[in-house]
Image (cartoon, rainbow, N blue to C red; front, side, top):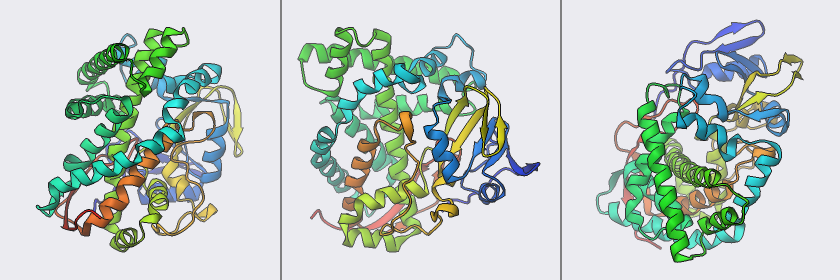
Length: 409
């Protein structure tokens, strides 16, 4: 699989130093693991990075920490009048306190357990449909041939959009807008702004269609909230784009990551095929050992002392979920094992900003994995994989695989 390289890491005092803007920086590197052993945090060119499980878990719940996405574009050279700055500063994930809680209450019905459970048969059916297309070939490029359509059509199903043929356009928009979270966002700004304009137009059309058709969909509840005065027009548009972006990119990446991890552990793939009831635990194990979202950013809202370190107001703190998830101090440094019990991972965050869509992510990946394992036997690499940098949001861009196809059960 891919070689996990990293920028050189130097030390400052008793903590390591990470040059996080270096293109070769990798959260999965030996240097980061060494930094975790040196101290609970590392200095970086973007503030400090928390590396250990207990500190990351505590800080995720600390209400003195403000969500950090809101200022990311500004901190990386995007002009203040860009609509991208406004989006990240105004959206659901940027809010704190009651403003965040109000929007979260409106999101909760969309991801209610009963709603997500009702979609599971469709997830399995879609998995078999996409496998049927590639089975005779015995090989595929897993991201383009499976993950992109799978994640997009699941989202369209949730949104109540019957025309699933638009999935390619949706993936392109979300992929281009994902560049807004990279360190090169200023250089990619025209592409990012164009994608955001398209996503807003898609959201507006979806609202219009929802009103015309009077369907009971996830969007219908948000439109009703707008009509009742609970949600402004701007909040409604951003809410829908948040749903699209969050649902598409992370599911595509995480499912691709899952296959790449199982390629490294073929015995675990065989075990999942033999024991499909292990799918929930397999999903959690992938999320623990190699999450697509590798850190969560927070800003300190008042002077604090964290683990003996004085942290002044305004400091940026990156909560490194992958190093925390594999911290030996809590016994989480064992090998990838879908039958093992490990400490609860922090991939979806914790506290008031715990990922509202976590159940959908767990359910769609958990529905797909056992079907894939039972039908793609003797899974193996079919060429070199290409990965995003393992910083911020990681995952495979291309993942060529070969397999011995088996029919649907």
